[in-house]
Length: 116
Image 1 (tube, one colour):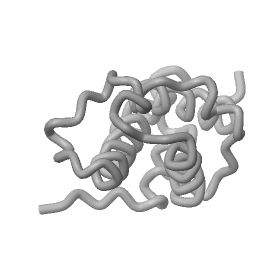
Image 2: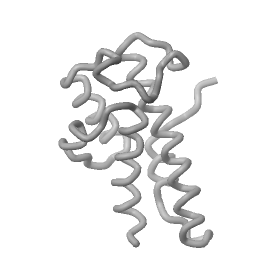
Image 3: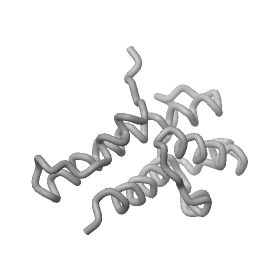
Image 4: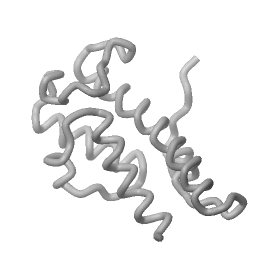
């Protein structure tokens, strides 16, 4: 059974929840956001590279996996469209792995939705 990772789920789990106290809501929402984004990103990379998701090392440098710069741009663009959010082009220069990409996008999303 395939887990649904629609952009509505991403948008909902990325919002601050008034029903929980501040840091608790942010921590729960951010953890769920990262889980969904990591799964979506790993799935897309595995499809591009012909690697099964379970065999994909989320800490391996994306270039070492065989992704080229155009594919990295495509990946970031697809994630931005899926989340219905703009992502900076410079993000491509700041990341090395899937886990790095998830962390950077999460920081951007939560800085927008949950200002201090």
